[in-house]
Every structure is written in C-alpha cells, then in structure tokens.
Amino acid sequence: MIERIYTRRMFALFLGCAAILTSLPAYADSCTTRDVMVERLKGDYRENLAGGGLHGEAAVVEVWASPETGTFTVISTDTTGQSCILATGTDWQGQSTLTKVSGQTS
Image (tube, rainbow, N blue to C red; front, top):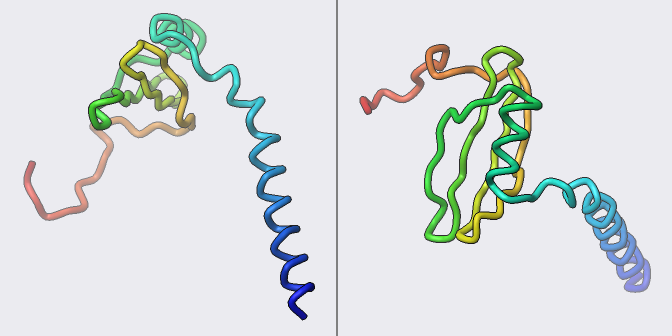
C-alpha cells in the first residue's frame, strides 16, 4: 500500500517537472532589455503603455495594450533594466469600458 502511494507521488512529481521543463524554452526569448521590449511591443503589436506600478523595490510592472488589435502584454522590468513578459492576452477592455464593481469611490 505504501509503495503504491509513493509510486503515485513520484509519478505526479515527474509530470510536474516535465511540464515545467517543457515550458522553459517558450519563455527563454521573453526577456530582453526594456528598450528592445518596448520597440517590439510598439512595432510588432501596436501596443502602447496602458498603466503600471511598482512591485516592491525590485521591479516595475507595466501593462501594454492595443485598442486596435485588442492584444495586451504584461511585463516586469527589474532594477538592471531587464524586462520579461509575464502574460499576454486578447480582447483588451480599456478603462472607458470597465465597470465599477465595488461601492467605493477612488
């Protein structure tokens, strides 16, 4: 019985590691200097800075979006100027189309 549980856990661990290792090459090209990143976002995807903020003392997180194409990209830039893509998506909803859900005023 214990051997069966141990085997299942090892198999689950193996699958988790395999998933992580196969995703690493996809993110290998997602980091570069901020200047190059901004050039790509503006040129290739027609995205402009939509907003951002500080992530602790170590990074700035920015959202770049295109109202034309509906795409958006979330990047993080560290203190050395290295930017990495955190997320990408489609169907961007700009600030004018957002619905206020909390009863609080800003």
